[in-house]
Image (cartoon, rainbow, N blue to C red; front, top):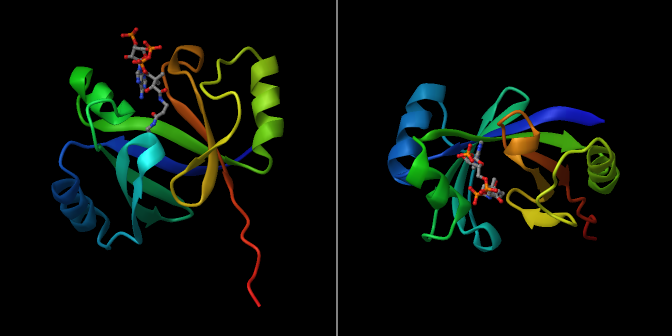
Length: 139
Ligand code: CMX
């Protein structure tokens, strides 16, 4: 069961300019910036109610974001849903005929395990599943 609209991912060309724009638009500063080498992206996160906006800029030409922006304009790149158990949800979606882009969950930004669903099998929308990684309390 998908739990929550966790975030909307927006592809941007100029991260500092987009960060300034969304800071003015949302009336608040981002709560986090993070470089995610495995995805070749730099990210900036804003809280919006119970959800988030993730700005994404590619860090090299092979990044999914750079490739996306070769063909499309800046804007919505993916919709991310929070799940309780990502492996259970991946099995459910696979059985429903969705095409998963990862065989196993991988580590994403903002302390999450993630998996993407191909937009061709999801109504033209790139869908991300994400599960928070529980961190053990330190003594
Ligand atoms: N949303 C909707 N459609 C998209 C899309 C997106 N974000 N990205 C590509 N597409 C469409 C293309 O327009 C194209 O459609 P047409 O054939 O109608 O022109 C089709 O998907 C291309 O599919 P493909 O050839 O199989 O794949 P691509 O090489 O274009 O790669 C994708 C697309 C989704 C498989 C790839 O970007 C991917 O694996 N994404 C997952 C990882 C990712 O996006 N990482 C960045 C975010 C990381 C983070 O959130 O931290």
